Image (cartoon, one colour):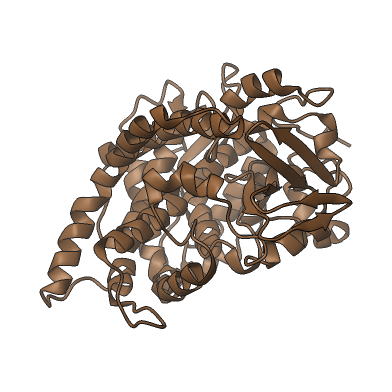
Length: 462
């Protein structure tokens, strides 16, 4: 039996960190504060000067918390950290405001149905391939910004019926990286009860760079819609037609902009992160790469074909298990409650951590190993169904989960058909968890064009 491949993750500390070491480690990444018992515990507790929080790392507890959004709403710690970027979007608001906004947003996601979205996915993948082919492929290619380019382009086309240039995607990638660098110390300082207002201006500036890509298109479409002009039938059009289920009022421009911002960011950033890791993992496993390429080229690529690409699908699921883009789900305790003998009070932070739950040995054998075959293992079926929560779970599960996995299958199939992927010895990625999980210094891969007799890309079925 071959030795399982253990991809990189931060070595946990031997014991729980005290306040100062925890602060220093947390400045870089949340997962850098974890210690060995974090991966085995059922309930952890951390008492900081400005925040008391608990980590529920037990599957029944996690299911209970995520299934009751009124009892365990999103914490304002999260809202404050993301407000400059996404305002009062459906991602952060709670209670009736969330229920009503979700009811207005849900119908728009009919536009993410695969039969309708597939042409957008293929067009964006083609644009990415063209951009890669312009590079000097004798040198390793930094993958992260390219995955942002293709996933942001897909969601831009789906929301706004508008393509995104590589330069605009690079601006979004750089701005969100800057936003995360400022948000991390701001959120950490708050948890230590230290004033952090000085971070507000740089956070707003970084967020504005992303809004500058979105706002001109959204504003022009909004004004045209309210002049009675017809526009493309897309997510934005559906959002502009949406009405509040009680008042009958439409979204204001500010509300509309916030919903577009979260759909855009959640719709591309998480997928880009996971795809970057997936390509790295595939590059490290030549036998798996050969199998996936054969699957990608076996039949013409179509919306129906995506559903049958089992090996590619399982590889992406395993990537999301090891590297969940949103590694910590933050909830508030709405009323005094007790869990596993711990008394929790309103305002305490309650965390369900996909990063920990999906790496728990009692749920997943060899939890840190990259093993796509576990998804066809009947003995792991229950854990794969219940403890795999990269998109959250319960009523607030990510509405675009299916879309993201279909998009990933298209992009991986296109990359595998076009290039052989290898990992240079100099590439030693380090996962860093801030707002989302990204490789700290990026991931550079060696991409080699496939032989001419091999089709450059999967044929698109008519």
